[in-house]
Image (cartoon, rainbow, N blue to C red):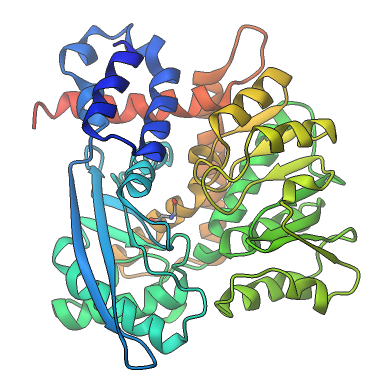
Amino acid sequence: MNVNEVMAELERKHPGESEYLQAVREVLESIEEVYNEHPEFEKAKIVERMVEPDRIFTFRVTWVDDKGEIQTNLGYRVQFNSAIGPYKGGLRFHKAVNPSMLKFLGFEQTFKNALTTLPMGGAKGGSDFDPTGKSDAEIMRFCQAFMLELWRNIGVDTDVPAGDVGVGGREIGFLNGMYQKLAREYHTGVLTGKGMTWGGSILRPEATGFGALYFVEHMLAKAGKSLKGATIALSGFGNVAWGAAKKATELGAKVIAISGPDGVVYNPNGMTDEKINYMLELRASNRNIVAPFAEKFTDATFTPGKKAWSVKCDIALPCAFQNELNEADAKELLANGTWCVAEVSNMGCTPEAIHTFQAAGILFAPGKAVNAGGVATSGLEMTQNCMHISWSGKEVDEKLHFIMESIHEACVRYGEQKDGTINYVKGANIAGFMKVAQAMLEQGVI
Ligand code: GLU
């Protein structure tokens, strides 16, 4: 394989799909060496097949807003790869959603799910629906209209969606209610991230953030460092940032910044239970602003228009959106002495930012390893649904711990360099790739 040739062909077929092309290039660059040691992969054209989604469903979603006006959005489901199990991945509701974004996310999901040790293929979906400023009733009507189209293409053993940006427990509830009504199937497992009384798994809401901190713990231990007393800046204030803030605080770190599209909140005294719970209220308000945090807690200050990366911190955790940390941000963090960056959002850093961190020799880990605890716990939710049982919080947490440790080990196995340091990007990409490639090879040309 020659990465530039594969990329030129992909760009020809998908011109201008920048996020998708960026995600594919990152993986291909890190697996090139290993791939070329396996002529059987080359012969079976594994890379050429793997970079294209299996199929994409695109549909119109029409609904009526509170003023009685008719609104039309676009809906999608990208079923990317099913070599190791049924399609699995979240739904994103955000005004910028388009096929490029969902293809990048579906591609990433395929490798991430492979890393979890569980049998799940990769998918992603969503809509350009913007939840900002919408009432609960509007969100319900939108979710119902979205499911009116999607339901025929998903199923317990075929494709299991979950949440992502703009889709949390409330949306999963509305989507699941409509699915059951349309399909007349009352199995609990067609969506994950469900409520605790109707098939949800304990710890699923926390799992992405908790898993990320378990991964960071292992990464720091391997480098002879610890979370205790470390200062953390994280971006976002939604479900993922909430779980990360909660676990980081529990493990003895101080979360000194959270952020939103409107600016950054500097929180020098760290988090309390009240502050962490307030993050949930902020998200549920549908206003998509973080400023009220500093109005409610007077020891915190809000600066409009600034990112979390302007705050001096030991550890930076992007928890919001792709490419939210660029080269200039990376340089600012380094100048302020940051020594660890772990992506909790999918592809949170631009390629230039990653190169800047790697060149500086600080600890860096990619989203597909760090945030895999979310989908892994979705996998645990599917298992509980199939078995018609509910595990205790302790059982789920132990399994999540084990999975994050396994992912860390896989990154070390494939990413250890001659000088003993770990290239986590390479490690995660090769580990995920090898599993999916082997599964595709063994199942023939289909
Ligand atoms: N959206 C999450 C992710 O990016 C979770 C997906 C899921 O639980 O299926 O991995």
